[in-house]
Amino acid sequence: MKATRLVIVLWVTMNPIFTKANIKCWHNEEGIRECGDRIPAKYSQGASEEFSDSGVLLKTNPKAKEINQINQDHEKANREKADRLLLNMFSNVNEIDSARDKKINQIDQEIKLIETRLQKLIENQNKIRAVLDSSNAKKNQERVKRLNNDVLSTEIQIKQSNQFIKEKKVERKLILHKYAKDSERFIELNTKH
Picture 1 (tube, helix red, strand yellow):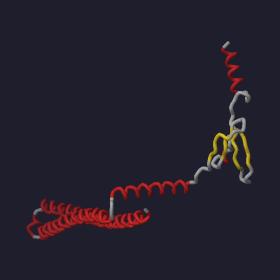
Picture 2 (cartoon, helix red, strand yellow):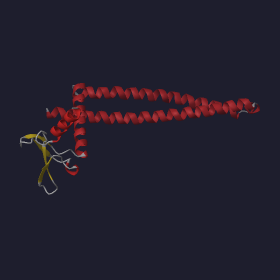
Picture 3 (cartoon, rainbow, N blue to C red):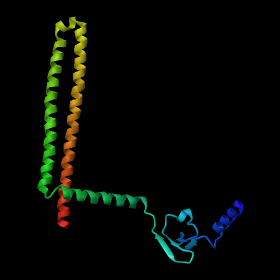
Picture 4 (cartoon, one colour):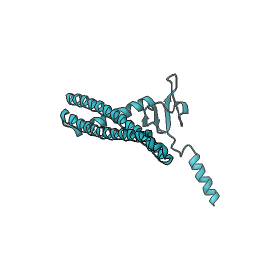
């Protein structure tokens, strides 16, 4: 009994009279329209149409976008999002300038603080070297070793401080550039509306 049911189910599903196979149509490289139950892989990214077995148009599939078109669409969406954000954050160019100035002042304060620290590190390093050069220090090898370690440690801190200042100056330039572009874009967007 189960075998008979299985045969009937298979016959119904495999019989073209009972299946609802949609017809798919596409264009080949010569532009000739071809149709079948499946679109060949080499044409699957092109535009196609899907029809019912009675010939009624069910669906139109546009050509798949190419990578550069997808990237352009993504860039456009990001630009539109950035524009909305810019317009929502600021009501005029003076507000943009004020935000820029706050960030620049903060960076300038950080640079000034590190420059003060750097000056003290250099002074300390000079004092340590002066002690090392004195004749009293050379008599005590343990003290010489400790002072040399202090000089090396101070040199590392000086290098790190100089690197920090360098990075902050780069950040300062980037902020100036970003806010200049934001001001230009804000003006451009407001003249369009």
